[in-house]
Image (cartoon, rainbow, N blue to C red):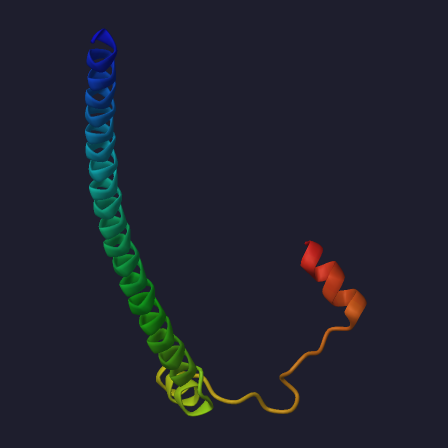
Length: 104
């Protein structure tokens, strides 16, 4: 008769252990799901930030190209009182002279 009692307590112990294991695995699954959701949200925010920065960079490149256009540079030069150089005004430095002048 003692043998039946030991066998019954073995089943009870196995049942308790399986319930505890199920609870622990369930809590782990919920925690991982929450972490996954948080990570997905963070990644979405970072992607939005990257998209905004790329759009701003594209706008700035367009603005730079517009400002560096020959027409715009000519207009800016006129407002500053500048004009095109005449043939005798431009000085060209040789390679050696440019290197020496750069060191000074």
